[in-house]
Length: 417
Image (tube, rainbow, N blue to C red; front, side, top):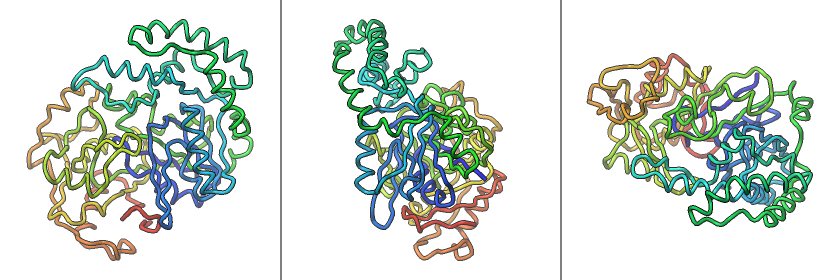
């Protein structure tokens, strides 16, 4: 059965490691949304792989496909592809010809958009040009990979884009679009990666009957339509976007992945956020710094209210919990089970200000005793009872089984139930 690995929080749940672990049993690993604002770190036999666009299944030598739902920065992709080629011989990677490109003016516009906002209204964007690139896609102004076959076609599009955006760039003292420079960049990029570009029909013909693993980027609570708008990413991160973003019409089961605590980057509501030494401890122990931005992530206790909402909108079949080891040395571990005594079937992110105002009290938390060192744990039966209680409580609350338990960053620090 095909599977999808979907982050259930605000991203950074450890999807890269789990996709790498699961991909052994699949033929194709497909990415269906997002840009290089997502980051996966995978450690295999003391070798660290940092990926932003290429699915982590590439580490196992699997065929990897970047679908039309992503936006692609040519400069970044080329660097990432070259780095992978240095570590992995002949990686098998395909790019949908329908992928829109992120170009330098998108990054300039991203910078302008963020500069207009102040204080808590700032989104906290990575300034990678992802949002403006998606805006151009919706506005039918994208330059796509299939355009690279014709410099005349690209020039025609750029002339129209220049008329549209130069007034904005000039108004904010940003450099105007240099068409000749862009043509040189895109021609060079096409010569480097043209052999990787395929139509969706090629992937359907060769892989529709094989086992496919779908890799999500960011997290469900950052979904453009279902997340904590406007503090969200610029694409649909939930599982229902898989068929649109990949172009593959196949059945699949959803593996929902979440950390044993919660984090988020940038502004936006975070009811279970910690502002004390425990929050700092989790950040330092869990190395909670953005793979892309290097910003320290906001940290808090695991929030089952929002997690249940994520499970529902993603139709999750089974769960994976990661980074349990980060909490090993805490005297007690808490789980947020309600907001001011209320448990919600659906969280109204349309009014994100109301979520910011939630002041949780002691009754909103379930407390568990420390489980201590778990480095020698090899299966569920050998886990400390307090950790078993912790996992079983989550399963009962969400009414979904936890099938995968990650006890550390290494591939072999994983338990399958």
